[in-house]
Image 1: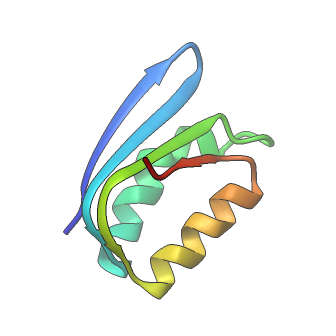
Image 2: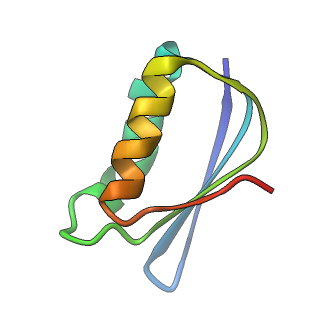
Length: 75
C-alpha cells in the first residue's frame, strides 16, 4: 500500500507518493487529487521519487493525469 501525502501551495496541489503503487491505491490517490481534478487544467504535481513499483492500472491512471496537465516528478 502506497503512502500518500498532500500539500497545497499557491493553488497547486503537490502529492507525494512512497512505496508500491497498485490498483488498490487508486481510489485514495484520486481522492487526494480530487480538488485539482475538478479544474480544466490540472494544477497538480505528483512526486513519485519514493515509489518502488507501479502496476499497470496505476501507470494508466498516472498517464491520464499527465495528459490532463499534471506534472510527474520521478526523482
